[in-house]
Length: 284
Ligand code: ARG
Image 1 (cartoon, rainbow, N blue to C red):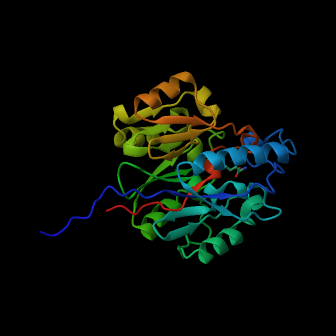
Image 2: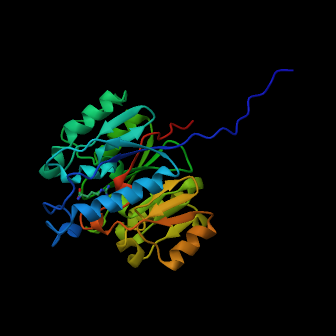
Image 3: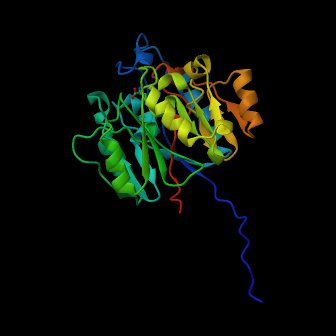
């Protein structure tokens, strides 16, 4: 009789993080940055980033991207682009302040063997900040638009990656990237702040996410970046969650780990946007 191969082998997720060497708030391109120009310290931001890296490293392999001088927001690795299988779709940033990151990201992903798939000229798209793969259904991409990314990116991504793209219109300027207000979790659970979306987009979420799988975040938790979570299997790493949100996540089988990231919130980011999943699986 032929021997069967055990199928319980688990692969360790791979996460990219960009070192915070040059991180600071040096301009204002989202409401969180207002009043915080030159308000961060290297000591505190490096310590918080190290704590996140150490926490993520307990559940994933972390790969470090070298930062570029003069690109303070490059630390937000989620915005480098969108990874799907071995394909990398580089971001096209809306604001001039971040466009200088583009050549560095293209070079890094080219050097690391990814196939580069470019969006059409003139279409803005800010990578895994606005493009989030569903973890329950393969080949479904939720895409935020309305602040940074263009709706035109949706059909283009569908073609480039052969995925179904569900566009969600972001309606509140505080939640300017999809990953600030929406987070697909293992087994189809979805963490989101309804107030960040227009009515049609909320209806689209409700059409695809069963009531029992919706983990609704209130404004208080959303403002503490609870939706900006790194999900690795049954682990959820985030800046802060209220007792109520933690209980609901635990009730759904998740282990919640808080890592304080207030220095990065002054720039409008937290756990999820400081990371980029490099092994985003291509499902069946
Ligand atoms: N200061 C950065 C910006 O406004 C923060 C980016 C946060 N990234 C994210 N994926 N939410 O572009």
